Image (cartoon, rainbow, N blue to C red; front, side, top):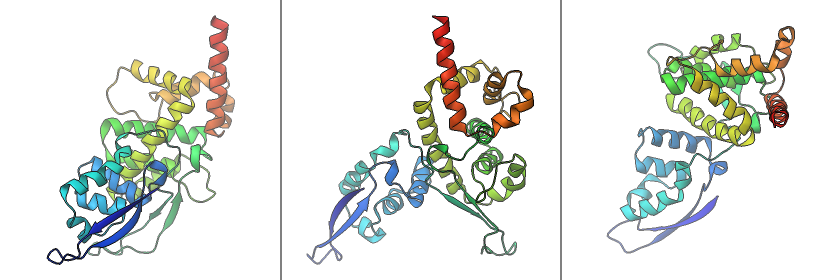
Length: 273
């Protein structure tokens, strides 16, 4: 975080200057949930500069409205980091609350039905099987822009407290997740893109291999979580003939699997020399 100081006139006709200080983010680790949603909205051109700056700076709208275009520009310069999706391994939106509408004519929500939580940093707590579902639906959404893929992607990632992943949970929850604001769901997609950058940096051999399999796929349609998914191909190559234990492999932590696969790829590369 960095501290900024702003001078402004509360009343334009009176030469009285006020000063205000505010802490603003300077990298992804400083960004809050509210700010992440604002960034996602800016990417989609669904937010004005003033509303964006209000969310990012904490300054009141009336103060921002009194600033010059040049001052807005200098303030925007602080947030240049959002244009560079650098690797980041944390989920910024830590919790989701699924709610039901009280009635069709009311916009008020009832009490939370269920609370879902993101994994810890570096995908700690996510199994390889869960990752396969989440990453495939993520890829599908990137290609299809279909909200069903978006909702299933989020249903794959967020679980109840101490809840173990099962693919049936995706079918049970994706429609309820679709009732969350689209801006929140798209912010999670943005967050996962940053996590993907971290994964590619942490496990370059794995993600290079998966990208090769994706490029070899001749179909342009959205892939279901089936044999058409590149991660399923990676998983099948990894398990080999040990099909009887495939559920055991799927239940292992994703980082354990990636570390093991990286080691195997390096061993194979040395044998070929």
